[in-house]
Length: 210
Ligand SMILES: [Zn+2]
Image 1 (tube, rainbow, N blue to C red):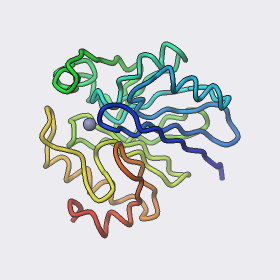
Image 2 (image 1 turned 90 degrees about the vertical axis):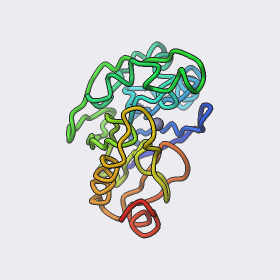
Image 3 (image 1 turned 180 degrees about the vertical axis):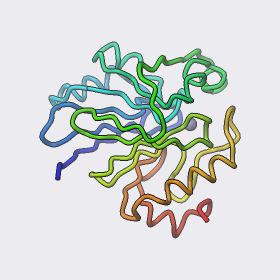
Image 4 (image 1 turned 30 degrees about the vertical axis):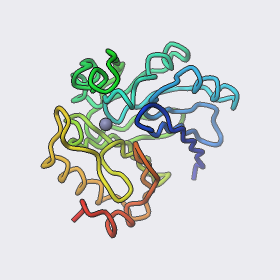
């Protein structure tokens, strides 16, 4: 079984987790939610002799994608997002950049993913799990053979993402949480904010998971 290395940087005004994952036998790294400081991220990865081969977005909020463009310019890596998130990515009002920091930040994904679609980057296979609720095009990325999921702002340790933003829906969020609870209890959850957790812990202690 392949071994994986995961790094986390907490970036931007809302302390967003930016994850970087690569196989131990590969120098190609995938960046999930490059929240801020794209050039710094690139320099840090270069110093580790790692090359960015893809950028995955769990959703289009500015605090998860503000460094996408800089990172893409520096590396040429493609940006992937769920197909239903296009409007948010391209609209500074919907993606909250105008409201929160008074800037027009947008991102243009190169590839739009479907629910259940698998992509392999740097030898790592990510399954796209469509999990609307926090936004209408939010998704999670499940790496089955590593037993981990990048949950964005859908599932947090003992909490969930807000559902009072443009395109949010509490009803959809509840369905998405049910979907995530079908993953193995041992599956590690890497959320968009806060500490990592696992599905078993969330089944027991998350008040939003019935
Ligand atoms: Zn968000």
